[in-house]
Length: 535
Image (cartoon, rainbow, N blue to C red; front, top):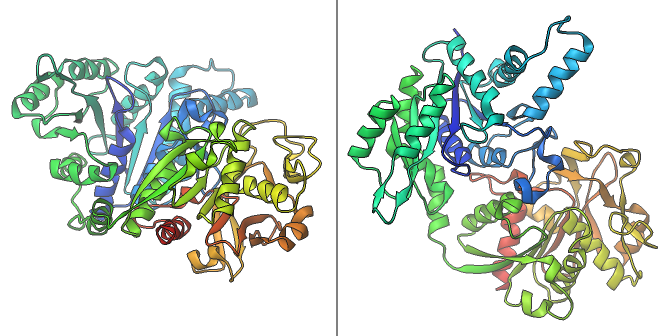
């Protein structure tokens, strides 16, 4: 009998119902009941990973410690569980097919006709069970991307059917997340879309054990009875998931509905400890009862889509709660920023973040925002490309290096203060070839970064091809842009600061990937604190 239990989360009726939040909330409750839990995401698209996807297509690309470019849901998993994910936590159809085709080319199938069943489904099942076989987890939750009925999801649903049968009773269950829409004209909730969705799932040979119903209005007993009858699900396994004011309310709502208890019963498990969300609710208390407000500008190229900067926005939430302050984030499109309108667009801000990104669109707007923050002594945090813009701005306007730039934006710049990394110069493939994952950084003890972290050696996650050009190190340092964080092995400048400014920090890495509810990132906490002082 397997030691690890498996929970599969599928979605129906429509996408964007919040499978990732439900999976993370359930995992949080099971974790607080004494179990070791991890969550993985199966993505049905044929891209090998989201690293080559435009943020407008798929939101932000989240990076793990071991350098995987993954779905943004892994960010939710880490923020809720406070434990890191890895390469094994995100599987795509692209990865599955790539592996199977490589095996076929090597001759591993010995002349067999390679087919969806059994070869693709076997590889999916192998990937699902990798985390369970490590022996590190009591429970593995697997979220299947997309919606039941999508052609691309069929191999995953078939793999779940097979696994459920192979693992046996009490070792694997299926939670189906669905929508119960409210028709304003009829003034009632309608169950028919859910019935059709469950029917679609059952036609693939999978019966849900639990139904989680997304809804804008409370589900009454009559609706629960109706859904139980038509969907072959026990009435107490019909779980209401009502719209919440914040995603951080969802674990409490799921606990109130008894989701964790019904899951443990169906998996034949008993809670090891009485679940308590004490630290979680302490965070919620500060988050919901701030002692004031501050205004922070987020200057970026993809601000129309909130998911493009999901981890940054959540890091701000964590840091705001830690400082007991409500942070109003003003999304400012860098493409629309110029010297004429910058004072108007950035007035009244207590802090400015210049966000990551790629390509030359909106770059001059970011540089203008850096200049404004520097000259007006407004707390500034530049992340990845934001840090590089700070270096360019300083080179142009303080060192008077005319047309200083990054070779990413202008290959023929006379002053390439940001340049392509040495080990990137021979790279031709775009996917998975950047500098990725966790790298060490040594901090100067007389820096804002050191004050924030409280230690002189840190490890942070990266995702970039271009870097601070050390040929300009002496010039920039003498002029007052100090390198306060350097990679001890490569000499790569990771952090720049202006020590004469109240709070001006640019970082080459992505601190937002490591901020969690229970461990807000120190750099964001300190930046928000500086914003409060600025107010």
